[in-house]
Every structure is written in C-alpha cells, then in structure tokens.
Image 1 (cartoon, rainbow, N blue to C red):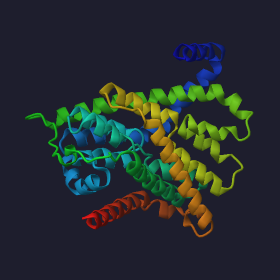
Image 2 (image 1 turned 180 degrees about the horizontal axis):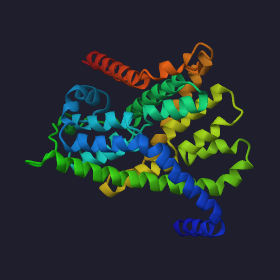
Image 3 (image 1 turned 180 degrees about the vertical axis):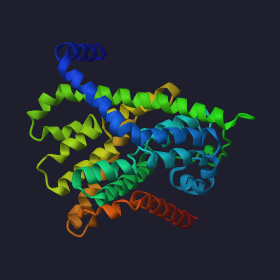
Image 4 (image 1 turned 90 degrees about the vertical axis):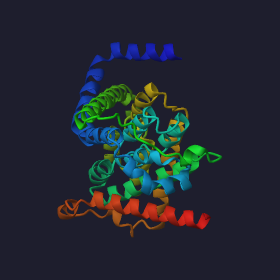
Amino acid sequence: MKLFLSLALFAAFLLFPAACADGVRDGLSLAAGQALPALFPFFLASGLLVRSGLAQALTRPAARPLARLYRLPPSAAPAVILGLTGGYPVGTATTVDLLRQGAFSRDTAARVNSFCNCASPGFCIGLAGLGIFGSARTGAMLYGIHILTALLTGLLVARPAQATAEGAAPYTPDTTPHQSFSSVFCAAVQQAAATALTVTAFLTVFCVLLQLVQPILSHLPYGNALSGMLELTSGLDALRALPFPDGVKLTLVSFLLGFGGLAVQFQARAVAEPAGLPMDNFAANKLLHGAMAAALTALLTRISPTALPAFAPVDNALQQRHYPVFFLILLLMLFTIWSGKKAKNKI
C-alpha cells in the first residue's frame, strides 16, 4: 500500500504539474497570510513557558482539576492550557517539550495530547465566525462549543482506568543552572522555527492534494464541503459559498473545527513522532471531538434556532473590545469553578 500510494502521488505530480504549482502557491500563501501570523507567537510562547520554568506557576491552580477530572499530573497544565488556546498544533508542541524535559511519561503525554489540540479563539472568531457568518458572536460560540467538547472528549479518552502515582508527582522544570534568558530565548525561537516550517510544509502538501482532487469533488453533490477533511482553512472557505442554511453550515463548521482536517493531524504527528510521543488513537479522538461538537451545535440550533444570539452580526465597535480574550477568561473561570464543585461532591 505504501508503494502504491507513493507511485500514485509521483504519477499525479508528473501528469498535473500546473495543479501542483497552484497548490504550492496556495499553501505558501495560506501559511504566510493566515497560519503563521496566528500560530508563531504561540509556538514561541509555549517554548519560553516550558524552558524558563514559568510553567510551574500554572501547576498549582490547575493541579486539582487535572487530577480529579483527568488523573493528570500538575505538570500537564501548560500543555492543557496552551493546547486549548494556542491553536493547532501548539498543544502537541508543548506536550513534546514537557516530555523531553521528563515532566511525565509517554503514556501521560499521549493522554494529554489526545484532547489538547484545538483551534485558537482568533481562528474560530476571525475565520469561522466573521469569515463565514459575518458575526464575531458566532465565532465565539463556536469556540466555546469547541473547547467544551474537547474537555468532554478528554473525559472519555484521556482518563485512565486506574489512578497512578504519577498523578500526584511534583514537577520540577528542567532549568539548567545559571542558564540565561538569552539561551532560553534562542532555544525557544529555534524550536518555534522548526515547528513553523513543519506547519508550512504540511499546509503546502495538502493544498497540492486538494488541487489534485478538486476535479473529483466538483462533480460530487456538495463535494466541496469534503475539502475541509483534508485542509481545514480551504474547507471553511468552500463552505461559505455552499447553499446551506446557517444552522447546517454551523454544524458542519463545528465538526471541521473539532476534526481539524488531515493536514492538522499530520502536523501534530510530525511534531510528536520524533520525540516518541504515541499517536495511535489520535485520528479517532479528533473524529470523536468533531462528532461531539457537531451534535452539540445541532442540538443548540434545534432547541433555539432564533433565540441564539450567535447568528446576529455585531458592529465594529464591539469587535474591537477584545471580546475573544474576555470570553476565554470567562470560560476558564467557569471550568475551574465547575471542576472544583465536582471535586468537593466526590469528597
């Protein structure tokens, strides 16, 4: 099968050079115009957070919720928080950094990575909300559903059958004695550059594949809706032109955000596998995440298709009030309160 697929791709590259060239241009443009401006600062921030020891500050407030709900050690807090807020594949990159520092075992790293790879709030609000529906509120609601179903997915796939001693193990960051900030900064920049190059390469490759299969998709009924299964951003752009009701579009977008597309999943694999991070059930977990997000979105639109404020566009003044940051802080506060109450009930 590997030989067959390799020969098929080689033949496609030879027979359709114009389509491949268009795909390369689309991929590089997508990486430079949308992906890297949104993701590279988080790549750098995650590297600094892990290498400088600042990650230890996140372990104390997150220790109890992670232990009670997911049976994860406090050292998983940076990967969980950055994975839920930083965009694809910041969660995997942070998990790999922590794994290399010995913060937790490979099994624990795989459990963290099973649900902490999410779209960023800027991606959901800017591209999905404003780009497709013309509403920042729609994007904020999509992001809320996206994060909620990611946390629910973690309860189903990341919680081991039995608690282990590692769940309460303290974490001491790997801070080399007398290591200066310049050394930490240089290492974080180099790692961020390597991750950015990986993201760009996979975006480009999957844009080429999308160009090759586009003639097939164009002959299928609403075939363009399937392009998001390969590459998320292009798939969302294709959904915008489809003659679907807003409720159907919202459900499809919610599924694609949870699934992430094969390009996103291969980006995560490329970051994880050199470090020995297991990725056996990663695709199945992302499929579960997308299915749960779509089901919750469909339920909300079915219960109250007109009362949901998400479909109402907002003016430019409201969009400039840092609504995504406020929504994220509120979501994290509600999650902390809810997890704390659940822990007290169990006690």
